[in-house]
Amino acid sequence: MPKPPRIEDLKLTPYWWESAPPAVTAPADIPGTADVGIVGAGFAGMTAALTLARAGRRVVVFDAMRAGEGASSRNGGICSGNIKFSFSALMDKFGLDRTKAIFAEGIAARTALIKLIEDENIDCGFKMVGRFDGANHARDYDAMAHETDLLNKHLDFGAYMVPRNQQRAELGTDFYQGGRVRPDIGGVHPAELHRGIYERALSAGVAVIDETAVTGIDRTPDGFTLSTARGSVEVGECIVATNGYTDQVTDWLRRRIIPIPSQIIATDTLDPGLMDRLMPKRRMVGDTRNLYNYYRPSPDGTRIVFGGRRGADTDDDMRKCLHLYTNLLEIFPELEGVRLTHSWWGYTGYTFDFVPHLAVHDGIHYATGFCGSGVVWAPWLGCKAAHMILGNGEEAQSLFAQTPFPTRPFYNGKPWFLPTVIRWYALKDRFVYGRKH
Ligand SMILES: Cc1cc2nc3c(=O)[nH]c(=O)nc-3n(C[C@H](O)[C@H](O)[C@H](O)COP(=O)(O)OP(=O)(O)OC[C@H]3O[C@@H](n4cnc5c(N)ncnc54)[C@H](O)[C@@H]3O)c2cc1C
Image 1 (cartoon, rainbow, N blue to C red):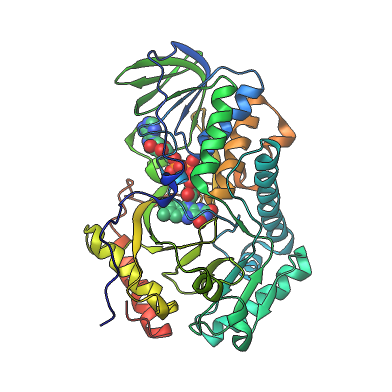
Image 2: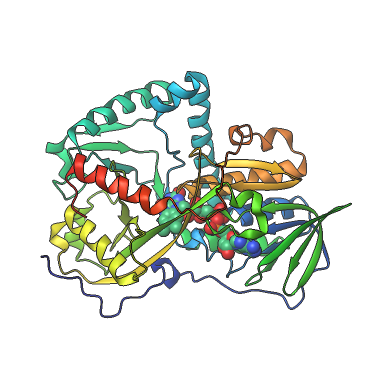
């Protein structure tokens, strides 16, 4: 049995909130009318709002919690713009041209996020540090090498493989069988990024109504009525950007989004020498297991922020925190007994076809289903939804607007199947990778 972590002052709120807690800015009165009403004040809702307000539209954004308190200020801050399929799996499904186009949209989305941060001068610790993906099995290393060849050949990613005997130059562990570096992926402080977008939207005249759930969206001859417990507002257009926090107010979306919880722990500041040994290049990191871990250094490079499965077997926050600690020790045994300062979780929003969607249904615009990669996709598709409303044909284009948005019979937004799926993946991980936890 390893030594337990030190958790004497553990906070169950995101480490990110230490420097950028969600703010409450509800004005006293809800405006009676607006050109556009947005439900959800995360990355997607706030970038849509900023784009629309800068184009002269009167915008009101509602959030059931504080603005950003959903996944947008709780995530790992890894800016990948990945989708869940590999290049070769997509090629089998759609052929080469469409696969290249989908990956190219990921590059465009990532580039747009960096441009937004630069143009708006958002102080959010963004660094293009690259990402190391550890192969948990020799077979995974070979598959990754094949994938890397495809990415470099078709999209010039500049990715490269790192064999196991050189791995310690990337990561202070022998846990992986080598891995791959993607230099095109960076990291950000997610809550500071959200705060930056939010403040610019406020300055552009957006009305953000926090802690006020939209309880009804009803069609009117001129648009929609958005109802809340504090009053209603008549809007011409409506965007729903509720992702993993989608509730019954949009039944159509609820039947299409699978809320999957994800959990993160943060260590205390570590000795600089230890950090240099464990994460010498301060990269973002992932792995190849079904129930994978994702982790990174804090933006100041002093502590490790470590994420993974929250699990469905218990509601006990402490047990979930200890489960992630066990995963952390598998990779970095040196951290046995480390002090953990924060442990928190949030909902990601998955879709049945594992890709994001930009959809219009019954006149409502939806930007959603980012499948755990919304730091890049949510601002991108939020912005696209705004361009759709503005009638900016070219800028509204997205491949994710062109695919049907599937649901499954009898699915009503409650993923009853999730515990079984997680148990199945855990079993596969145990069988293939010998994982015990
Ligand atoms: C623990 C964790 C780690 C993650 N790590 C990464 C990562 O490293 N990289 C990455 O790319 N992505 C990551 N993600 C995913 C990413 O955070 C999300 O995809 C992204 O933030 C989604 O943004 P959003 O604006 O669509 O939704 P959210 O930020 O989740 O906002 C949705 C909002 O809608 C509001 N809402 C819901 N219903 C209503 C209603 N009826 N009325 C009013 N408001 C309502 C909610 O209160 C919520 O604030 C992670 C997610 C989690 C939870």
